[in-house]
Amino acid sequence: MSFSTSTPPKITRRRATKLLGGAILSGLVASPLAAQQAAQPTYSRLLSDEDLAFLEEMERAGCLYFTEQADPASGQVLDRATNKTATGEFDQHFAASIAATGFGLTALCISDKRGYLDTDRIKKQVITTLDFHLNKMPDEHGFFYHFSDVKTGKPLINVEVSSIDTSIFLCGVLTVRAYFNDRRITDLATQLYNRVDWPWMLNGGKTFSMGWHPETGFISTRWDHYAELMMMYLLAIGSPTHPISPDSWSAFTRPPITFGPYSYISGRDPLFVHQYSHAWFDFAGKRDAYANYFSNSITATRAHKAFCLGLKRGYTDDYWGVSASDWQHGYTAWGGPPLMGPVDGSVVPCAAAGSLPFLPHDCIRVLRALRENFGQDAWGRYGFCDAFHPELHWYDPDVLGIDLGISVLMAENLRSAFVWDTFMQNPEPVAAMKACGFRGTRQTTNPSEPKPVPIPSPSQPVTPSTNRPPNL
Image 1 (cartoon, one colour):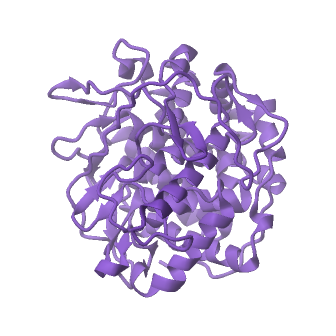
Image 2: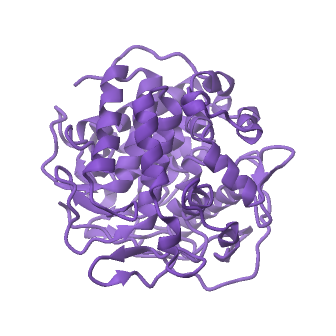
Image 3: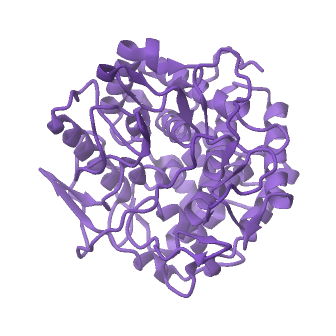
């Protein structure tokens, strides 16, 4: 398999809306709120040609993972794979991740838009993936297991049916539905979304359980404080078949964090919680009764950078950023502020890559510096390895699908807002945001100007589960 080396045309935000196809599939027409997305600015014009060339290189390498490391018969994407391969053969790991598959579906749209692969080849993989997950993949009330056998789809031992990871998958499902003007894709994607029984996962409450085990039932820990959960609640509120009440939007807490001059909403969680929902839902220039969440993520990223530099563990303007990732001794959820996990001077490239739309110059600077200074050991077939620590001479041999996914999607959003514009052509997310009280602000927050974020009453956060399978 080879990616095209032809230079793709530049895509502006206005042009993107002409290329989506989502407005005409199934007779759906985007609502006025969806149409407003095209009026929001992107920041690619602030970047140099060298910056844009780097983003192109990073995206192309990352997108390659989601074709080479997807099983051709099931479409499932491996949770992890080696970054040291020269030929792109399918990795010997066998654990697929439902979240990585969701990121992969979106990456396939980017690959098509950028001309990385032939459209027929991409559509075939999309249809295979959707059909397998609808008709062959084990599910419970429409929710999928977190990790499964990449070929059979059978859940791995002791793995939960995951509410958040299913939601990430569904964001990819709705992205391909909006992008491809293809009746088969439309039908499969709509069935996958519509069969999810969201009230079941509430388990009698107003907040979602983190998951369900067939042997023991619902996980007692709930999605009850601000994290990457916004996508899940909005998908559920917007469901045309099994919706939950918009009251659930106010049921999870929005705990305050203050670090130096920075005040924002966050649990005691890694940086990725401020990125994942933003990969698909376009929160720029909007707020609800509680916050402007795009501005909140800007502040969270600024605070995280300042936190890293203040640790005095080798972090500089050209070397910073940690998030849930591999480290020398396995997998860990680390970050801050406040200090979380064994932060030892390692760097995790997806931390900065996932915040590209929030702090373009800061994030581009550190990513390009990492590539220039450590690329010989830290860069492989799919781009950056998952994490590394140069002073300890440790470079992760693997990449993780979810970390590549957030990097690719946010790089594309910075360049063209393509994922935002595509996903927001779906009427359900738009209707959900309206039901939750989102309204437009007069202008999009400038990433160079941090703004104070209104914060509701304090609440003790509970760190969500970051369980991972062994390196399968």
